[in-house]
Each structure stands twice: as C-alpha cells, then as structure tokens.
Amino acid sequence: MLKSNRTKVSDLEFAMPKENSSASKQVRTALTYISPFDERFLKLGRAARLAAENHPGLDSADIMDMLARAVFSGAFDPSPIDLFDKAAPEARDTAENWLHVPIEMPPAEMTPAQRKLSPKPQQYFGANRMTIASVMESLDALPGEALQWHNLLHDIARPEGQEEAFAALTKMPFDHYPKAGRRFLEDIYVPRDKLHRWFTLRQIPVPPFLDQDESQCLKLPSNPAKVKHIGTMQSTRGRPQKAAWRSITKALLELRTEKPKLPKKLLAYEVWKRAAEEFEEGDLPSVATIQRKMGEILRSKGH
Figure 1 (tube, rainbow, N blue to C red):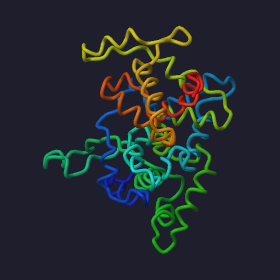
Figure 2: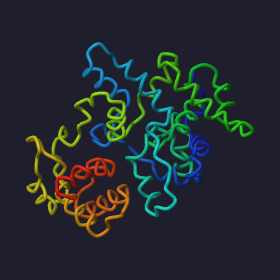
Figure 3: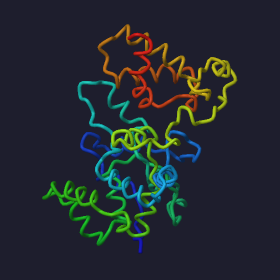
C-alpha cells in the first residue's frame, strides 16, 4: 500500500546531485505538463512497448527490465558539469538533459485551498537516479521494505550506502518491483536523444520510432512570419526534417570557422541559441541532436 506522504519537493531537495545542491535550481527544470505529442520525450513504458514490436520474441517487460536497470545505473543522468566551461551549467539544465517524473507541486506554488486537495496537483520535474530512488522509496515503490532502502540512501554516516543501493537496483529484476513501482518507472519521461544514444552504445538496433528527425511529421509554426522557413527544408530520404536545420548548418559552419577550438558541446548549444531566436521551439532539434549530427555535417562540408 502506498504511503500517504506522496511525492513532495523535499524528496527532490535531498536527492539533488552535489554539483546542483540548491533545491531552487532543480525546481527550475520543472515542466507543468508534458504532452504525449512532445517529440522531445517518451515514456519508458511506451518506449518498451514500441521497442518490443521491433524485436519479435521479446515483450515490453523484457525491455523495461533493461531500462529500469539503466535508470539506476545513471545511464540517463546528465553529465557532470565542466567547471571550466562557463556555459555548461545552463546547457546542462535544459529539459532534454533530464529524465522527468511527476512530483507534487511545491506548497509555495499552491493556494491554501489547493494545498488541501488530495491527490495534489503535480508537475514534471527533472530527475536523476537519486531523485527517482528517493521518491520511489517515499512511495514504498521499491522492492522489499522501504526502511531498508531509506537506510541505504540517506544514512549520512555511510555515504557509500547510496552506491550500494544503486548497485543493488541495477541487479533487481523488473518483476521484483511492486505494481506501484513498475507503474512509476513506466511513467518516467526519457529524452528521445538519450534513449537513442543508449541503444546505439549497446549496439542494439535503434527502433524506428527513435529516428525522430525523419519519422516526425512537420509542425506548422504558430507565428506566420516563420512559415517562410518551411520552404527551405531539405530531406535526405524524402521525409521532412526539422525546419531549422538549414539555419543550424549555416550557423555551425560560421561558428566553427570563427572559433575552431570551441568544445563541441558548447558549439552545439551556441548554434541552438541562434536558431531559437528565429524558430519556434517545435521546429528546433535538441542540443543533444545537434551535437550528435555535428560531425556528419562538418565532414559533408569539408571541415
């Protein structure tokens, strides 16, 4: 049975990574709502079902077993901040760098009447593996007794307990989680780019649904002044690409020439910022996608 103290912002505060220790910084990654049509994210459960369809003989539980272990191994966590890269913290805090989980809204953001609601309104907060484990522990959604996990995760006298907890969770079969735990893991939103990279690094054939630059239908921008950019799109296989790619390619080549020693991560972020001034968010690929395709673009242009 679930505990009554469902997910709270306090769960986020003690789950913050050391380099992002302030709770306010974590709250800034909150999204009021993630649409099922938002092509930046995909629920783990849905990803598992779609991947299983691409691999006869497997079912979604098999894929979820792999994904749950990956979550607690930190495979989807943001990379540590480069202290010598001034733009790194801002780039790291973009929504596409984080898993997102539903958490109760902070009490300060609710009216007195809203605070009395049960269940309470929720938002999607950027989360690392520590956040997810802590929230699941508070919901009694981890395998076994919640107190045992609490002692591992939050005993200040034994900081090594956290790594012991994650080592155990990466070896925990998915069917050992209670129903509430399986549902929670399936409802986590994962950035598509991170999921694509995860499949690629493990040399698992990338499912067609992750080939987002070619599989997504073209979205018309809400600003009529930007409609003209649609006509400039190019397609490599007869399907529409993101409307901003031509502008991104141009900015990438210019910046590469101006600042040849600029780190690729920062280069991708600067290119994305330029494109964001010109295009709607729905017409932009993520920073991670730009970085992933950067080598291919530069090679094709002789850089």
